[in-house]
Amino acid sequence: MDGLQNYTLFLLCALLPWNYFSGVVNGGMGALTGNANLIKKTAFPRQHLVLAASAALFVTFTIEMAVLLLALVVFGVNPLLWIVPTLVLMVLLAVFATGLGLVFAVANVYFRDSAHFVAIGLQVLFYATPVIYPITLVQDVSPDSLVARFHIDSLYFANPLVHYVEAFRDLLYEQAVPSLTTIAVVVGCAIASLWLGLAVFNRFSGRLAEEL
Amino acid sequence: MGDIAVETSGVSKRFRLYHERNQSLKAAFMRGRRAKFEEFWALQDIDLQIPAGKTFGLIGHNGSGKSTLLKCLAGILVPDRGSIGVHGRVSALLELGAGFHPELSGRDNVYLNGSILGMSRKQIDRQFDEIVDFAGLETFIDTPVKNYSSGMYVRLGFSVAINVDPEILMVDEVLAVGDESFQRKCMEKFADFRAQGRTVIIVSHALGTMRSMCDEVAWLDHGKLQGVGRPSDLVDEYVGASHEDRTQAPGDSTSSGGSRWGSQEITLDGAELLCDGRVTSQVSTGADVTFRLRWTAPEPVAEPVFGMAIYSLEGVHVTGPNSQDVGLSTGTVHGSGHVDVHVPTLMLTPGTYQVTAAVLDSTGTHAFDHRDRMFRFDVTAGHPRDRYGVVSLGGSWDVAVDRAPVT
Image (cartoon, rainbow over all chains, first blue to last red; front, side):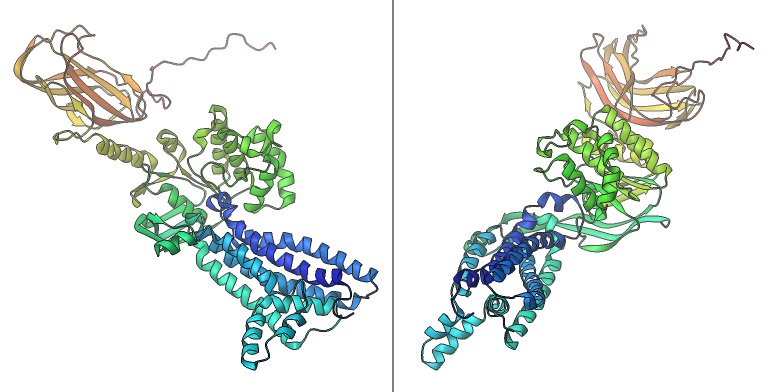
């Protein structure tokens, strides 16, 4: 299949991962402030609250993806070969999203209005990620001038989600192996995000009970 | 479990007293800073060794850092300096609510709380009935806990905390919320824990309970450790110190004890306890003692009435003899002298008592000098050997068989 032959499938291949991502970031933000009672009165590893939010959403995500696989079969695609790589990619996305969730969870404790800014940020990110449109659209309209084109492209591709979404689409919609660059970015971002998330969280988790 | 259940060395905790706190990005950005605060050391260099298998109490006035210390031990707060070593599984019940989720039902909260305290679902399944039974909440277990009364909250929280089989139980001043019968159940549970060699760390203002329950207590004052020792000694010392704080009347430096008022036509300059002709502060039950009140009367005063009252540390007014009730005519007093109250057999049970003394006019309504909690004395075990209550009635016991078993 190519281009926009089946827009529904095309959309869902990217929309489901996107929904999961934004769900984890939002859920992570509320995980600490929403459980202030627990944090102030009992001792347990605080990151579990964010991890739990992320894990719960992952279950939903898995079910949704299973339904998508069924739909692909109905539309005459055989996705069996791509199930395992997709699962790996889902785990990588989960790691990436959870890392960011940890950062924003702490941020929301210190600045209670972070949630509003993140909501706006996610909105922008949604359109900056090729979820509802094909990535070729961006590549095609890039200006002719080489310098300008370089700027726009590097800005656009600096968004890690572009790579995650493209990887999902490659696997499920195009039934192709993502490019090496995409794989490298996806794995690298997952590790970096988790490292950052844990570092920020451990740095600030000691004072959570006082700040809440 | 080793010999030490919990040890701390040099633990200090700093809090921030906020003058301005910008909890939103907007405010922080507009004002150009996040917060303006002063530092406040809630705990300073606490070195403690809490032996395993003992019941350990923390006492101190409000704001002395007891609860902060307990939260540090429980791992909820992280000390800024020093280290804490906890050897054994901890279950902590701090403040009301104990980490319940208000929207969930009592049943769900038992599972939530149990798993936070480290139990598996199976373990909770097994203990569930016992937990609910102990809390006495069978009827309400499926009601959201936001609708619970504070007593129900505490009962459920405590019930979960003790049923998770902890090696170290930490309880903050929460049990006071429960009713009489629940408190008794808790006390029994504490006794069980002690018998099973578990460690209990408790914060309370109920000094009488602390004295009888704890093996050892630590006294905190303004975040500093004042001492660790036997409850009987330390509780008295603490009570003494808090009375001093409370009652140091302005301009009255001679007073070592409580507040003082009166028109001062006669003043009470001192009071002492004599036993075998010597001034003492410690006597035994059944001793022959004399209470001596020293007075000074710059002007002649007709028929003053001398009185004294003995209070237990818990504040029970044990007795209040006065010279008028016994029909003593004091005549006109002038100059200085003393009044003796001779008690041939002091029928007080072991403990610490406080003496209030007063001198009034003959109508008993005008105080010349009233000195509250003037001095304290200790009563140690003697004869009779009664231990409970504040007085012994000195009764004699006799066992008789009224009917022999039919053979």
